[in-house]
Length: 357
Ligand code: 13P
Ligand code: SF4
Image (cartoon, rainbow, N blue to C red; front, top):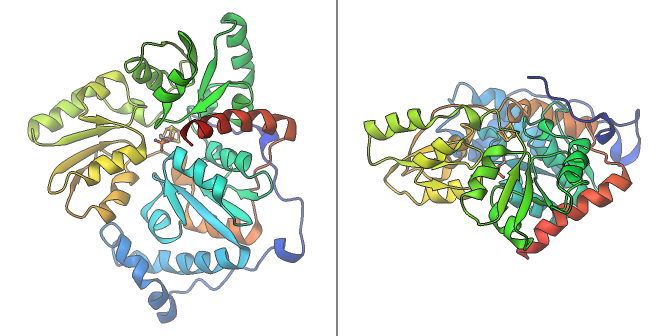
């Protein structure tokens, strides 16, 4: 499936710039004894998943990125699905979509580099209009975000006059500009109930919509989008894992289909899943989500055994250490959102954030 991001939402840097935004030269990327020493404490965090033979390839990038972040006054926000060397070795802030959105709002750095997908970078830009927000790969999309457009929302409003629209944050700024409020997987039920109505339109994830409907009396009218990673899990495969070891704790993301959720001991956002998993000391857990997350959690939950059916998000995996370094050197790709659109989209995101505060 080809995913595109709306051309109006992004703009590359316009030619060479001077001063603090000048393009910087590529640093030496040799694995020297100095680099080995500088990054040794970081290797300690990922040695359970990165073999020693691979570290000399990562370490020069890790050292260069960490130096450049200071020089550029930049922070790296990394979603829980980023690879272990990004998540553990260069990220300043890690979390689920809601945590990243909130922390983006509090950042004091001049530049934000988004370790995640395009809609997350747009959310950071909405909350930091005066900062430079960079996405290291413009093609880092999301099957949910590309399943619906602003025009679709306008058509839904015509079909269901007066019914408020809740959009999962996994949507473009263009869609956020058309809806009443955003939600994440961590607060979807709370957001729906906060509206005080009998019916809501919930877009674009049909499975998150079903999960919310199972937790509230509010009638949910859903769109047909799906996450291409989570929709691949089946209840049948989870039953086989449980048959093999009845003590296993199954932890699922609410983007999974209902037969998967029915088999889970716990369902929650990626941050909720991490909290639940790390509390299972001495136990065995199965994380039903993108598989980098288990690698990342395993770093801090050494006494938990992780079983991981591996479904990777190809969009999250577009973000790599070399692309992050390139982003910091060239200050590409800058996320830009037309002001008129940004004002309306920001309102939907801030309405959600303010609910929690
Ligand atoms: P979280 O908000 O739970 O981190 O989910 C984001 C996402 O894209 C999951 O696929
Ligand atoms: Fe989108 Fe699914 Fe990837 Fe999350 S895991 S970014 S919902 S495609």
